[in-house]
Image (cartoon, rainbow, N blue to C red; front, side, top):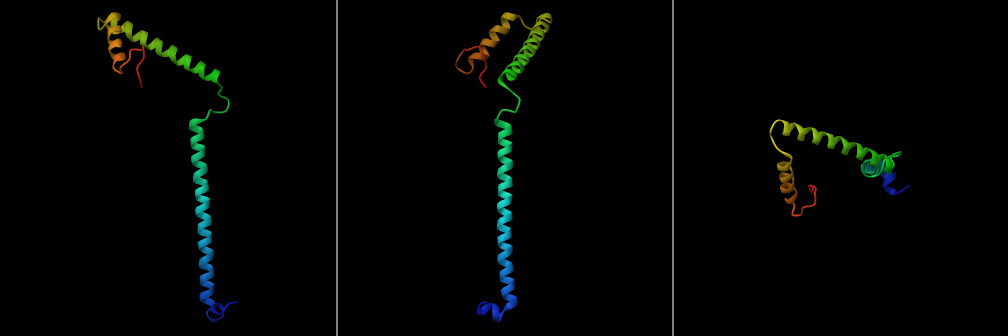
Length: 112
C-alpha cells in the first residue's frame, strides 16, 4: 500500500475503479470492433464467394434458362411490333447496329 492509498483510501479506491472501468470500456470497444469486423467479413463472403452447393454447372443452367426466356420475350415483342406495323425486322437490325456502334466498336452487344 502506497502513501496515497493510506492517506486517501476513498480517492485511491475511486482511481482504481476508474482504471478498471477504462479497461472494461477498452475491452468492450475491442469486442464491438471484432463483431463489426466479423459481420463485414460475412457480408463480403456472402456477396462475393460462391454459395455452398452452387456449382458452375448449376449457374450455367440458370443462365441458359434466363437467355431462353429473354429470347422468347424479344421474339414476342418483335412479332407484335411487326403485326402492328410499328417496325420491320430490317429496321430493327439497323437500329441495333446504331446502338451497338455507340460504344465505338460494333461487336454485336451493348457495353455495360
